[in-house]
Amino acid sequence: MTEQALVVLGAASFAAWLYLTWFHGDFWRAGEWLGETGEPRRWPRVAAVVPARDEAEVIAASLGSLLDQDYPGDFDILLVDDMSRDGTSERARTAAAAHGRGARLSVLRTEEPPAGWAGKMWAVATGVAAARSQEPEYLLLTDADVVHSPRNLAGLVSKAEAGKLDLVSLMVLLSGRSAWERLLLAAFVYFFQKLYPFPRINDPRRRTAGAAGGVMLVRARALAAAGGIKAIRGEIIDDCALGRLLKRRGPIWLGLTRNERSVRPYAGLHDIWDMVARSAFTQLRYSSWLLLGTVLGLAVIYLVPPALVLGWPLHEIPAAALLGGGAWALMARTFVPTLRLYGLPRWLGIALPVAGALYLAMTVDSAWRHWRGRGALWKGRRLRAG
Image (cartoon, rainbow, N blue to C red; front, side, top):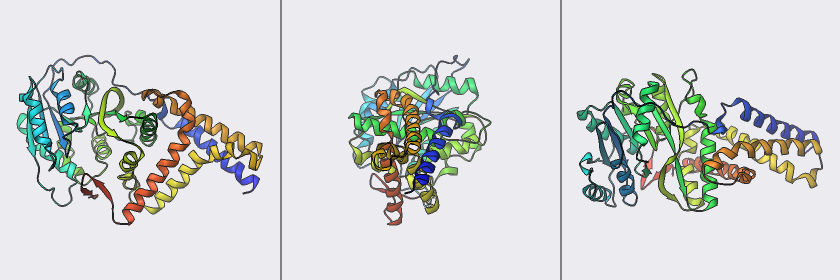
């Protein structure tokens, strides 16, 4: 490659990182937190809908945290067993029977979803329909592997009431055992923030919309007016689809948390790889052209800087090495707030190119699975976009 080409690549990467650092919604600062808001004059009724498929190992911890909620208003919990084969319902009933507030829990079971419905969305719709008889003002849509802190629901409702928000969502902490797994999970959250800058989502003047499916408090009236869960029945990336649906009608909010966490263990690279490969090509709308653009973009942003710096002994082009070093420094710096969130040292910011290369490969593998007809697989069920 000619000297001029290497300098151009370095300049492109450095310019990209200047834009991402200063003009892309401050996504990297990780500054959106639930915080303290004043209590509402009246605590509205809330119904939690928890879709669960083969969650016997984690359901007791998740439901226990919901039953433990220190919420002053009426609060009911509906567990929707999505055709589990591992005794999820039985574990849930046992956990509720041993809890002093176990009467809050109802357990439903779904059948095979109708044509055009994703399984999770059918389970959520089943729970939402059952909750209507209780006339809740809010629906807490939460995953079966999420453990909530005792005041989480009160904080979510206070935020929604104070801001007149139709959706309040939290990106929960993901669970990795080793520092390597935590690095990749921190990178996942970093990339999510880059794709959906939280400050832009939270700005009602911006069109950017998204949500994190682990914790979503939804105003029931707004959801019904937007067409209900049926409006996103075939979505695989259902949380962001719900964010887009609701932001068309009113303000939404998405933030980070240190107190709510997923207890689903990601045991090594294989589990994280599968998590990303399930939906990465869906995010690209199954477009080969978008895939090509994404691969080239990720290569310029994440791979070119270390290649230019570490390749200095081979090319000996000062301008290329300096531009690559500047891009790498900005990259590492912007990763620091998310590393702190996961309790990792700042210096690991220099490892972001490794994570970027792996996520690039996961994205390509997601497309390869789709082209081979394997698609997205989740707990024995093939996921197909509606």
